[in-house]
Length: 468
Image (tube, rainbow, N blue to C red; front, side, top):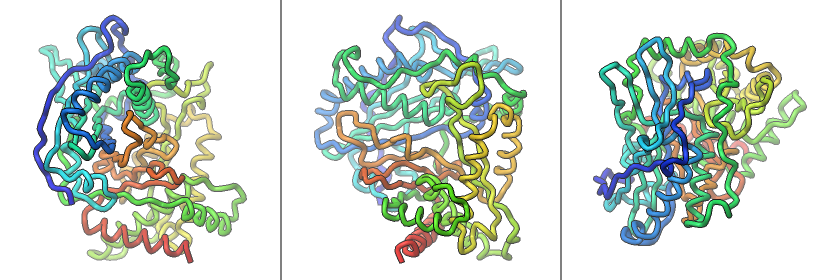
């Protein structure tokens, strides 16, 4: 297992769009953004193989990385800005000031930490990853009580002769996983071009910021989230200390195993519609996780009621699905996800056909959401989320295979490992495509050590059942 070793901080700098290229801009929060005011930050790590020295890294890689980031922030300027929180009742908003605001960028060197241990799929102490995550600075508070907090910070760490890690911490208020991935791929494309004229490159489409005013709150949805934000200590929303006695591990469900899952679910189901890769792998993982957590909790007490209901929260991208005069484009910068709550009774989820019950319910939930007028249902989303929060073992999803999180070649090749670190505080399962390009699915889990051992055993037993 990788051991905790101090980092050598080489430099810190401030990266901003080229002066004069982006006008000072304020952006209001929509009702999609407001829930994230009180929720965990987004934290990600991308590891790449790199066989050269620190000197070569600083000379040949870092200048290009910083220059391409500056150009990228010309399009994704809110990430170089701040979340401004005035005293109530004025709502928070995003702000970028040309010539003043910037993104804190740290360059570090790691000598003592074993890079191969960091990128291994086997369980590792979650604390070893936190050295490579930049810390979001505490907010500045003016004499008038106005809080100003950065949106994003980035840290790049070199492991001489072994690898490079690009770490990112950001407030989810600014944008969802679609927006963050869009930003990373734009930056990646510019970096890989190594100084070529952006006008000559085939880049991802730029983000669209102007349609925020189109997103109308359908029923005082944001007001409830703002009230909860104001009633809590809003200054506490920041980087966290890693939980104690917790490990994280990565598991891959292969294409063949996914196909076996699909075949089994289709054969058992009375519903004729096909089942997706995302649905079956999520159902399979959820059943294995809840089985683990229930077995652990019930060794210490009486068995819970079999009519107990477990809840899983999924997110549906609302881009191009909202019934406004014009659709919200796929390149919209911001949050645009609707929460869907999947509810399955314990007797069904942990029964012999638990994966089937989970698959059918997940599919039905997604279909119902896509068939409904999402704006009309938005005022009821909070009720479902509260039910999810109050339940035992609430589970959610971070990432998605379709985001292409391993499609991040900064000129070093694709990542040899990617981690969504924030799953350790939110009870989430991290999902991505498999890093080997075989069309499998990679799952990231964070649990206490004893529970992780049990989960791995249960998952492998369930996989073996598919192969017999």
